[in-house]
Image (cartoon, rainbow, N blue to C red):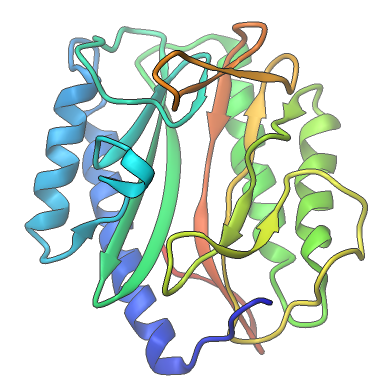
Length: 247
């Protein structure tokens, strides 16, 4: 069952989302050659706490860090470390915030300096897939209309969508119903209604859609070591259409 939020509850999620967006902008601006993923995580935690909010990811099911920082072939759940970011890398930063008992979640992938033509196209297509998925978050549509829009965009450009990880509802918990796959046929699944809040997050691979999990038990990498990109927004379904809350 998908929860429907009252206007005052969505307002709190909107405030949490504004913090997510602001911190992501700070982190993205710091993604330069020479910085470590651990340094980005420290900055993320300081920035969130400095805004009187909580780091939603740190401690969630044992995750050790405030941010997921995934580099190149890492799809999601990259654990920050001493890994040094280099020119030509692409870096995905996924961030969640809890504020007054409500959650918001977003992700962005950043190119470091001059990146390859393939990496540039991957980022462009993944960002576009998110935009098209968000447009489907309106009353009367079905969950799979989001999935279909994302998959159609991605595969038409020769890339693939990750199957193992999905978007989700969000609100009182970081992960709520429904699951929102990035693939599927349209007009399936639960019907969307005003008041629902969703986290839509295309994870797009340059090669195969298959992934593997590293020995740390968290980090997903592409099975063929090809590049991967990840963009995400938290969005409210409203009578006027989708409202992105992580801006």
